[in-house]
Length: 132
Image (cartoon, rainbow, N blue to C red):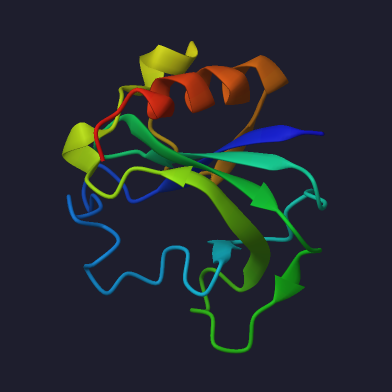
């Protein structure tokens, strides 16, 4: 299993606090986008990172191979099917990324970075203690 920190939003265009109900295509229907073909395979884990908020708000498992989505924006043509394992609906309730042992960072040039499997475990622990 590989693990990745998957960024969503930027400091200039952060996700809304109620990201699940804001009409976002973020993870609907069970997919997340990439600007180029990601090196991910089924079983890999994604720690979901709201970069503008500098917090982690979920963990997802990759459940299929990367594909080019028919209805994807031109800038994010690649899509990976995911299953959400745990999410925090309100970003204001999400733990800071430092809770999983990762420094906050701007990821404007990348949509994801590689993590160690221990970061996924720390994310699951941090998210388990969050009031939904």
